[in-house]
Length: 384
Image (cartoon, rainbow, N blue to C red; front, side, top):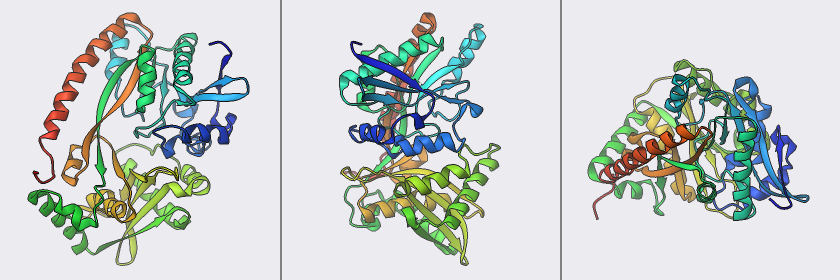
């Protein structure tokens, strides 16, 4: 690596925020979830720490005193909070008497949002960073390396370094410069347009009204109410929430401009909320990301209104380029969120298992292509 040096740091706080964020801003596909403030909040709020199976090993590439590349790497003893599922691989290892955990994951914890993962000044530095990651996994005797939801440049560097690729499907909405929500509805087929109007009417007829706040205008009381909804949603599914209240306090303090909060009220009392993330690069198009929601009362179609129709109406009004609906969910197509492929990259230390996984990924990849073709035949938009 000539005069390049890899340094592994145990916390994002050990990296200069200015240097990290400057690298992020230089990427073709940045996201607010890779900002230094976000990753630091995950660590300092105890949301993603060794205590819950996320041991940070932030990998940095230096040339002299200049930071050339960096990425968040976590050594993990489970596969929770990743959204690219490798449980079958772990089971296969166990059945053969081998240890799949610990493994290494380059990802933003609990955040299935595509974007830059390998922050680098140039393609050479990015490839060197990948090679350094593989070398680190070998040194630590880890079973595997997984880069999740990477940007195109990340995937190119991983491919050059011999990693295997895996595709999954998400659903994103693209703003066709609609004049308003009615213009958006007019672009849809009759049955989809009718269904959306019926769903919205059910919520309105139930007496539910929405208000939204952005950035520093989100009050502490509203953050507290949101967390109450968020926590309840997880508890109803039998799990503690991934993120602590302290995490969101830190978000309000360090990157408030990245958040948009919708509060649903009935009879003047809050009863549901949805939290949307927003891109923060001033020189890039505005992108919105569906993140979390919860309700204290049950109203038919409230989820669709809070998580899709209110955010889409806001995106149209404020000129957002795209709304990303998160992982999975074919039902999103009925709301005009269309399928897109996302890509992850994988390296396995065990040669025989690497060969077996490569064959599996070939079959799975063909299935994903067929699935995309099938979804493409179910467009909610009017036929041209």
